[in-house]
Length: 304
Image 1 (spheres, helix red, strand yellow):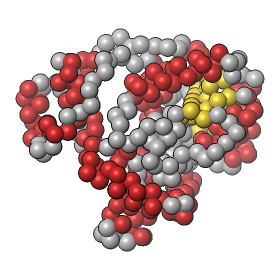
Image 2 (cartoon, helix red, strand yellow; image 1 turned 90 degrees about the vertical axis):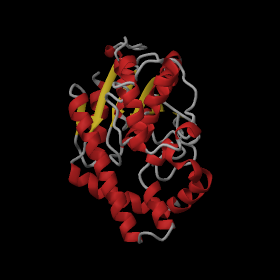
Image 3 (spheres, one colour; image 1 turned 90 degrees about the horizontal axis):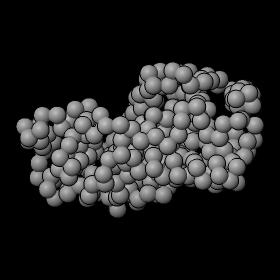
Image 4 (cartoon, rainbow, N blue to C red; image 1 turned 180 degrees about the horizontal axis):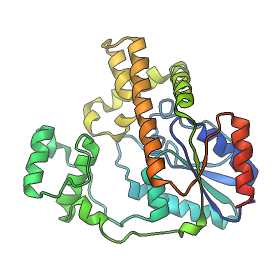
């Protein structure tokens, strides 16, 4: 039994971390907490690869509507409270996912920013992206420091924070972080399978998603959110845009499969890059045979 009461399990998309988490939880009496920013949404279960029903308690999966704003800060507060509640019961909290920003918030803390009202869509709808960013850059040159201008959700967030607080995101990020846990309280694990192996798994997984109803899922999703598509974070889930094109007869099924494969591969590459740069002191496992992986991870946990 691990002496520490918080296990962190990071892995790229399709690496098998959800299955591994369940087996760890069964062995060590854990409750599982979601650290995947796309698996929080109610409306998208199949494409986000949300875990199915299990005897193990899972928290913060499919609990937010795609129409609602949900930030790293909100996740951090909710998860910190849940971890303490789980530990209070004498159980281990197992945080699993592939969103690096979530893990960084948990281990390094996060600046406590004031809540800001939801973005005024009517105010910015008339603006094109170029004019919008130029206008606010002229107003405050540092407003988009550290912000990817191709990520509209982050652009809108930067604008909203500045409008309602008078400070840029970068200025807020320079303030002292709020920490709920000490670094010594965590057991940190990464599962990083070889890229070629992962690509084969990704191909097979999307075929399974199609069989499980991914097309219908996106069709229903588009009926609800097509009018607000630009502003919905869940639109970043891989497959929503591509399946939308397929449903409109703009691309063929092979084109759909190829586009999803390319985007998923690119996403996994970013996760590998994050792991190399941000998780150097995490225990890493690269096994492709599941039983070998499970045996090694459980052995490692028994010694910590």
